[in-house]
Image (cartoon, rainbow, N blue to C red; front, side, top):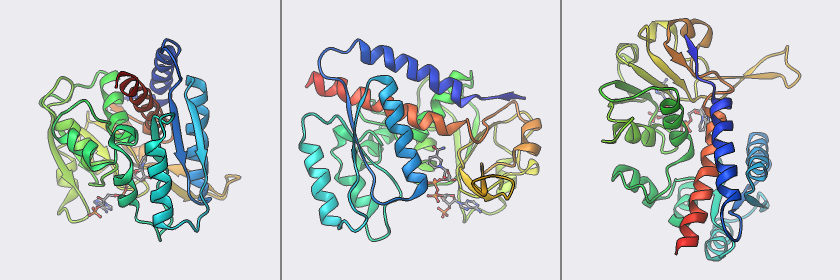
Length: 291
Ligand code: NDP
């Protein structure tokens, strides 16, 4: 079994981006990070994005509207960022408080600044295999992990567990694309799928993104499969100072020995998501400079 080291691959990408940004003429790329409220996971994700941006030479602008902000207030803020020529990319940290319509906010971000890739236009471009848009960061990170680990999906059966707009659907579309490295035969499973283990056992490449701690067990995996564990789940653990530990959607101790390659949690997909956000931000700057 070979471990797919997301930390190492992400740091390679960050080094590549640092060199690209250093060579860019004029203003450095600028990423607006909008975080509403104090959800502890969101606080740490935004902090990580801010520090990674600083490493690369990307300017970040942190915007912290009060948790009481209205839908109209947040939409006005997005409109201002859309119109601001000094801002290249906009990220609205998910999840938003329950009183806000998250999908409407994702749609409000101008497609050319939508470095999270959640706008309707950018999701549509993934379906159309149009490279001029932005691919959502976690699915893009998964594809990058696979290609940099020597996994070619051509002719492989790729089973995606989960159909969210953030991970499951876009990664399934990417794996399906008719291009080098992709070209997989893709099955998408969800909570309505019958006899899930019978389907997951057919997977040459299994991508688990359901948000259920250690759900994928050894009996669900074909020996020799490549397993990508997207899940980030907090499990109570009295031995930890924080009172919890992070675990994926895959039961790593029993599944890993079966696999050809597998991502750990943490240290697999997670670091790639941030790296791909930076890649999209640099792309947004290059595109805006060309306009
Ligand atoms: P969502 O909750 O939006 O979607 C979960 C999907 O899994 C749904 O399609 C749901 O089916 C399906 N599902 C849930 N339970 C089952 C089940 N028992 N059997 C089969 N399918 C099931 O989650 P996300 O896609 O946003 O995230 C998934 C996981 O990935 C989470 O742990 C999240 O924290 C993590 N994540 C990690 C990221 C990273 O950077 N590493 C980034 C984003 C997410 P249905 O549609 O029928 O409800």
